[in-house]
Length: 116
Length: 113
Image 1: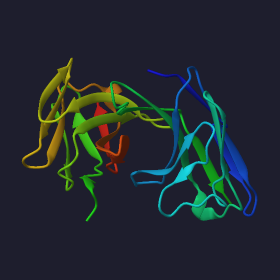
Image 2: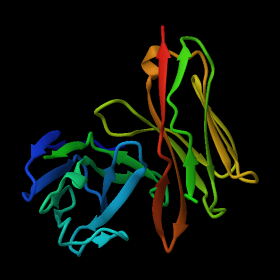
Image 3: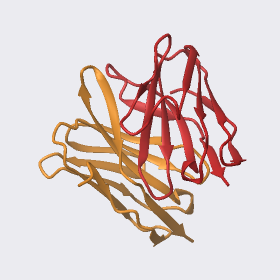
Image 4: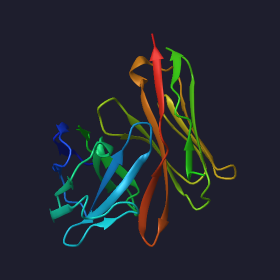
């Protein structure tokens, strides 16, 4: 397993501002994932962050809106830019571990974001 | 149609009841099946993991996978108030060496004393 520290745990932000969420893992991992969890909906993958390369974004998510940094094998940030009330959600970082295909995900405790 | 369907509940049961949580899916390529438990204001935690079809038991929890019916279940025996949480099913298939998890929407469970 992996211990994942995510901060801030929650924030209330004004429309048009940006928030950067930090994710720290207690061990080196190749891939880190950023998810969004909107009320009553599935976890939705935003992007996959590999150290030393550009993040890979899922359909519906773009780098200008959700820039990601991955400076080393234990840390990543997700920025929610130019926020609107529709961005109010829980944002989660995760890493994978397990057997040959690393099929198990471990999650941080999430960032509850409210945009006014 | 969503790839993974899960009844959102809420499901309310008395302490000691047997709970059955279910998901259906449409992608026959899914090979790995997981159940995550998420307490309020916490991230999901991996509860059960199953590869391919069959049953897996861990204490009061049993996970079942029926690939022929594209149906997975999680049973909780002797449910406790501490089991009150949202339960998310998740599944994945290996694609080009990369494993992408698809989650259900989650079922809220409340176990009352």
